[in-house]
Length: 113
Length: 123
Image (tube, rainbow over all chains, first blue to last red):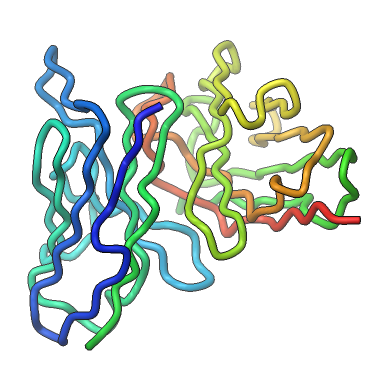
């Protein structure tokens, strides 16, 4: 199984500042035939289901604010929130869909400093 | 508006059985793969099972294979998860999720999620 390791486990950032969350895969999840990275990012607020933010490592889902961006390739990926807003407090998960079983990172809890 | 609504959770004894349902609306259910994802209390997310749009191809996580059965009834726009021989570590909120934006097979990422239904396995 592909193991995804997120860092840090928790993060406190001041309002308006940049937040960066990393996700490292135990194996390459870049599919050479289409040059696509099979990685998504989700946001989960307390008491709510996860919400899709980013797919193909860097494609923002419709309706997601442009302060959210995804980057990286191969085994190392990053979710960046360019200017933290109060409503961004949540747990963030990366997930790979390169192969089955689909697996998630352990989550990163983002709070306001 | 796309909606998925899970039901059927509850308290069950170890070794018992339970069937979850997921009613879908707002999209052509019969065209899309669906998945179940679970989350133990205070823990992270774990993908459980996926089924293609026509039910012909099914995938399971090793942790549930042989105990859980995913199925769908496209005439009722409903997804199911039959859970047998339940264990304490199956305790979780179970989410039904639409499996990707493209029709047909499982794409492996989830663009719409239900609110979840809690399954508690305890004596």
